[in-house]
Length: 214
Image (cartoon, rainbow, N blue to C red):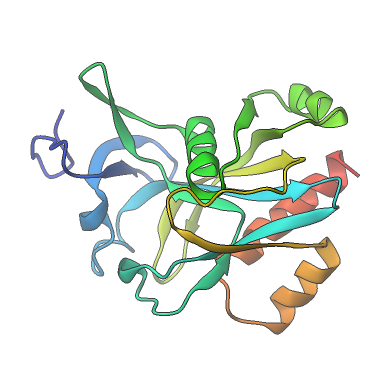
């Protein structure tokens, strides 16, 4: 397999999924190349977003994320509970794209130490939510997201968890806090120390929660 520029794949390079704006996969793209200033707005890539909700606390979880050089940020910002680009992983000698459900579980484990059981059926997810123990996930929606910097095909998920003891395994997360929906709504309207995607993720999570889980 080659990357989108025709280069042989290198085990030392991290690749993410380059795609069309409708999510059709084109192929692997170097994560570093994909985030170059002139490339990032032009080439679409897969990204997994998820809000984390604890129904026992009745609160959403937010992570304070380490600043990343490729984002041009120097100060930590608050973000949705779990998020990350979908990589290519080498399995039995072949590179394969990690799709949304798999990446949701991967990012939840690496970023905040949650072991998430994913559901592919809405009804099964809702049934599991009735007797929640541990963490469960569901990809609620897929959509194209673009702003001045980002150009992503997003798989948006909701993680329900009974856990509060978190483990920041990969060092990306500095802090984690829990806010009620009303407190989070107020925070988003008054502050600006968060990634813009958090506002969209919260609105989608609340729409789903109020329809199916309230």
